[in-house]
Image 1 (cartoon, rainbow, N blue to C red):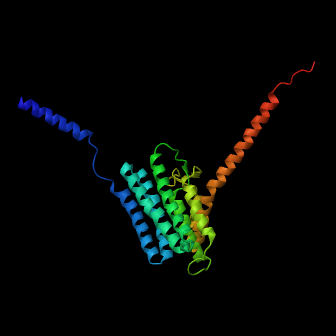
Image 2: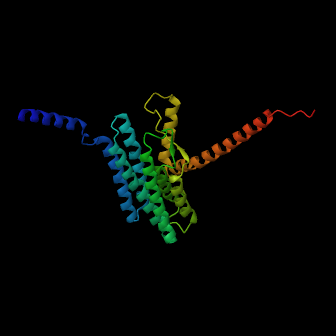
Image 3: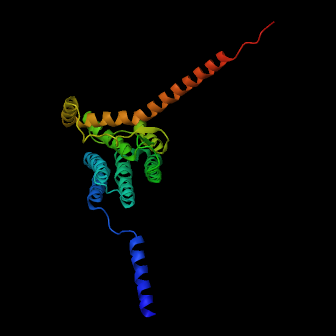
Length: 274
């Protein structure tokens, strides 16, 4: 009997080993994600020391690692639920807390309560946007994002700081209401349902026409020469593309509805007066 019980226990142990989830993480994509988190922490430290340009550049550097980790995970088939959750936590620091602290310390302190409430709303909306994104993984279309992506909103705030230096201004900006409104607007756009274009389906690793290489080289040259202006304009166009595209679709939809109603009215037979 003891031998039978022993064999049964061994068989049960093997079943548990097979059904138990594998422990461990994929090293390469999570190391890239950690590098992005490092940039976010570095940005916070630089903001506390008053080095706002370095803080803004660190946020933009975190953008590069954020684009790489997901692409590397997909190319190497190393995506995991752990990686998705870890990436969101890192994004909250690098693209939520870091840019919020940067814009508050750089421009919103004179606004007193309205200033810190703006970054509080910004960070909260960043967390909500990331949580909604995690719940929609594998459900929503990969052709667009629902709401402004958190990295794009962080790039917008960082590029504003860089653009201020580009136009030749020194020191801290005056009490401009535009900077306060931009912070609130970015927070609202993140939790909105306005669709934003996603570039995940771009097949840049495949063969492309020669003219696309020349365009890429020219863009790189301009970026190196005038990086503040190029980054600011590029991010501004992307942020504005969501509301503009949504407004155009709504207007086109109303025109189609009115056209259909007019066609229906024309198809109604006229009653004879005889």
